[in-house]
Image (cartoon, rainbow, N blue to C red; front, top):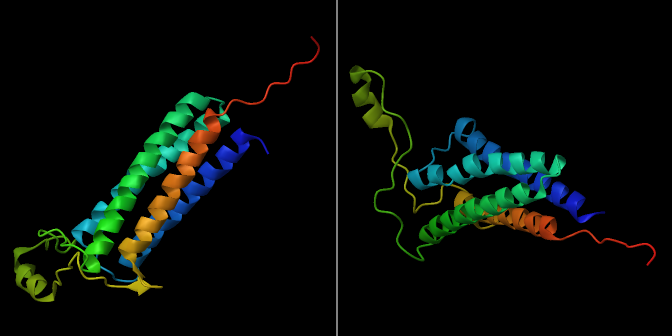
Length: 174
């Protein structure tokens, strides 16, 4: 398998993995009823910025524009590395390794009518950034986001490195 083909496959894997992660986050919110905190919502921004970068890089690879694809992959690496850092920061705050943000509360919208405000105040639960609402294998949503974002960043970086490599040229005769 050529380096460029492997780069395309890894970029596609990163794109599909990222789409699965952000879809899962939205699914837990909309179907599962988990209300994200402010920091949880911030952890989604790298996916909103990074996934289009991966998609465009994949398109450019198909058009053999390796240099521009490599730059977009490096940008995606930085974006997802930032997302991994956000996830690790929140996971550490959840484990009480350090203090979380002091302004972290609920992520729900305000009521549409003033008459509904009192009812909304009684039923609204403020979500803390320092309390994990769910864990699997010891990792919270934030911990899994750190793992997933770090993995996507690594795939994008490997893809960029593969595009940087020059193909072997065989000279015939001399």
